[in-house]
Amino acid sequence: MNLKKFQNIKCVCNGTVNFELINDIECDWGNHTVIVCPDCQEIFSIDNYCPAFHDMLDLAKNNFKLFTDEEKFDYTLNSHPN
Image (tube, rainbow, N blue to C red):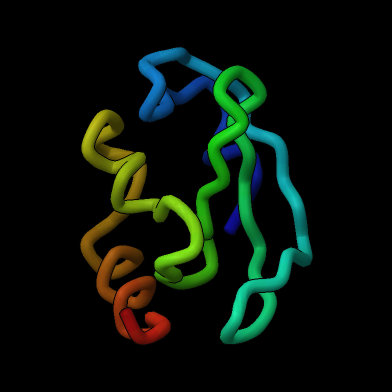
């Protein structure tokens, strides 16, 4: 995903921020591309759903046009187990 998509959007902390990108962070099931809120430091997995981090669907609740239905479907299709 393009980092520009995550600029000037509303975080779960209710701040409108420019998220920072981390290309490689590890969880129990593998590595992820994540974004970090510079205000609250919450981490969001943007490559697929992972229970170790917030997910992009959390961001979609406050940013209705941030993701297409296809992007949401693809994101959840490749999820880790809960």
